[in-house]
Amino acid sequence: GDEFAILLDDLDRAEDALEVSFRILKELRAPFHLNGHELFATASIGIALSGTGYERAEEVLRDADTAMYRSKAHTEKRPVVFDPTMHATAMVVLRLETDLRRAVERHEFELFYQPIVALKSGALWGFEALVRWRHPERGLVYPTEFLPLAEETGLILHIGQWVLREACRQTRDWQDRFPRRRHLGVSVNVAGQQLAHGGFVDRVDEVLGDTGLAPGSLRLEITEGVIMETPEATTAVLERLRERDVRLHIDDFGTGYSSLSHLHRFPVDTLKIDRSFVAGLDARGDNGEIVRTIVALAHSLNMEVLAEGVETRQQLVALKNLNCQYGQGFFFARPLERSAAEEWVARPVHC
Ligand code: C2E
Ligand code: CA
Ligand code: CA
Image 1: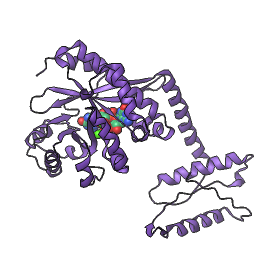
Image 2: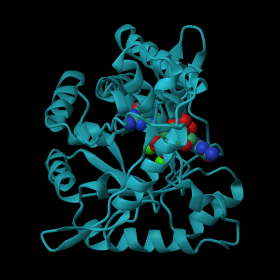
Image 3: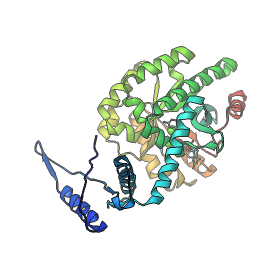
Image 4: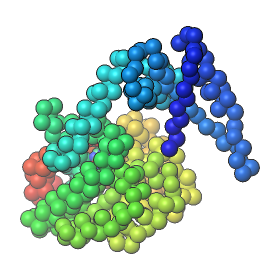
């Protein structure tokens, strides 16, 4: 949709291709005037040289494409000429993609559960469900390694749907087997594509219906960045979820440039303070300005605050002093396998 191919023939030297691409970049740097607006566009350029001995046009396009993605990855935009070592990297990605498709078919995913506690009482407030891939050869693979590719390939829709269903099923199972936990909550991460895909609300309805989990026990985590990409469209979906009493949490809050006017209109229950703001806290509450500001903001908007990445007792003390209600982090527990999480569920409610 947004890619163009340019064929240059009769070049004397490889450098000529680079020169042409610098010229293109320079042209594109000037603003475009559209309906009275001034717009800026950027471009990434990848170059494949025919001297490499191609037999098919597809191969040239493939290598130019690989080089173009390499160029995209650089912060300063400059054209990149394909070289065969890139092919090896591209093969690794391709392999990962094949594996990932197979993983979806063979259900190789697993959920880990990280406890979230109420800071005042220390009581378990719920879990965040975090996906892992149990790769047959590589063992446990973490989401940061496969989710970007899952998003690029659209596989995130399948994975996300499975995560939602499994997290709801498991939580309902715990609620049933441990009656003191009948209000146990579960936080599920939702990718932008899932939200953008029409029918997300229907899918949530279906999962809640099938698993019997009360909507009030489900907390959907949506990053601030995703919400701010399309605030109007997202708000419409969030409102429908809110009507059902599903809880909404803004993930990684503080990193996504929320506009305050939007924030005010989002039907959100909880702001999840990004762990980068928790990392610098000490017991006296020094470096707590941002946390303090977010807590004040949340409370004035009738939202609750959850701090992630709590790693030390000092941070815990500081967060309590700053009136932050909930916390999650290695200080309490790492993300746990189901059986270890169940030990938390089985503990006395207040401990
Ligand atoms: P996130 O939503 O911000 O999840 C929290 C991440 O921080 C988790 O990494 C967790 O293991 C880690 N963490 C928890 N406590 C601490 C702590 O005290 N210190 C530090 N340094 N880290 C802590 P994980 O499990 O590797 O997940 C990474 C990201 O992958 C998540 O970030 C989330 O954006 C995404 N993700 C995970 N599961 C899913 C899923 O099912 N669906 C979607 N769409 N995204 C997911
Ligand atoms: Ca999260
Ligand atoms: Ca987060």
